[in-house]
Length: 237
Image 1 (cartoon, rainbow, N blue to C red):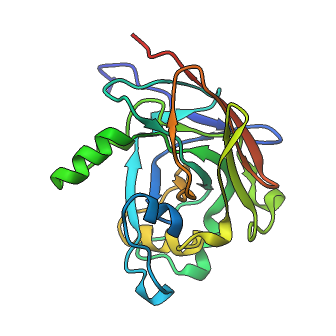
Image 2 (tube, one colour):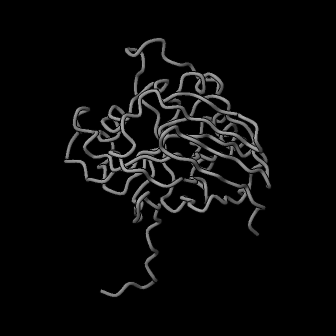
Image 3 (cartoon, rainbow, N blue to C red):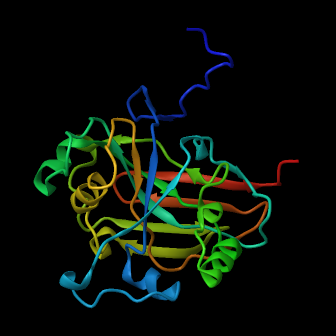
């Protein structure tokens, strides 16, 4: 049967060494660094046993930005940066919950990315007890650097995440500070969704999130994996 409208192409992220990675879905983890949870006014778990369940939200696949230029979004006066490890899945998960020990086999590679957030809209929604999808899942809200295959990236333990804006360091933390590890997050996601090849998972941000303005230039870095240079451009009209 013929499509009644043209089918959009899947967004694609470049891969180091050649090729492109078509994006299926974007899952995001909230409050995965204790200090960031505290700066957002939430309680951080006192011990691993007190973690409860991770917080998840989603962005549309076409929120991906690969050229580093993100337009300042409408309906906000408080756009924030959140630097994150991005995990790319290269295989479908089997039906049912995924065992933690089996999760690494699904990972194709890693990148550094940004979870751009309309912080004022998020705060309004939180105060009203409403969902805050519009604060997270908007156009161009997911800039991503090139993907590095997992074998090339190696063991990520102890790697540092950092973000600078206009030459000033704003965020810095290590992946060891994550409350939930990559295998644990994939296990938890698999209880809720059927994970597929092409999925991206944004793993949460360290403290230091702050506002961006049109014209700002920034650099997001993940040691031993990659760099994402970005610019906030004038709103699209």
